[in-house]
Image (cartoon, rainbow, N blue to C red; front, side, top):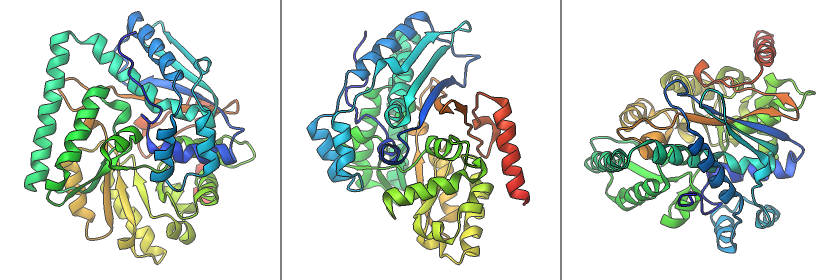
Length: 406
């Protein structure tokens, strides 16, 4: 094995811990299957050597445990996490027998993670970080790899300069890029650069990073709330529930767990329009804001503003968090479209951590099965959808259609 990539279980996104506590307390019976997908499968292949390296890196990840210092940090920086949950983390570690990793007949990485979701949820982000870094290190020649590193840093410095001069004004923004980073080394350097430069930004506020390890290292805020996996599991993983009401079940579970804490809801798991049917005045009051992750951001923003207005809620008190395929120019434009109508914030991932002369790893690791049944993500654009079973997609779409029409 080459140098170990994941060396701390805090090298993960904050929302994993938020969701992990909810799953432990309320849905420990949810057994899931995660499926890896390389969205650039036609042009980006894997070799047997890459797959073996990924296996070794995953084994090293599975040998990790949380230190007392790391758990103390989680407890103090995230006071909504309960003492019993922190105690659970003190004995937690990933297990290699959850994984099935091999090279398929099309020179693609076949990777699944199977087991209770309150245990396997912590594998997604670190494993994707391992895959991305391994692919680049083993695919690129040494000169090409060095060139990509240098270009990544050069572009980072250009971005920082535009924020310092005020050429681009983002308002509040955070890094969301752990899973698609070029490497841990470059990720570390980029977060350091943003942390040190943030006081010089004009009309841009670097709030923090979704990565808990680097939030701790650079004394910045860990950020994040919820992901599609929770909506898929709670809303679709139990056959007695109508999946067209997925968001209602999740919002109810979230309020039971956190009350008014962690209040940014992801709208697009089964489509924003059906989400709005459950986003009534009570939920809209309790949640601090909503997150956009697919579809036209301007149309989505206007739709959310109209919904708040219909409910008699002052949108200036709510946050519209945009996180879909953003660059700084796009964020600048979106901010100026909505800044006088609501609070606006951005979660920016790939553009911060993997913007170089080699395309980033366009990859996902998604829950595709809960308790032996298929589940789906049906976002606001078809290209982001993911499901193993076309029959289940048909069922889910018919359930949603019936609800929307009746």
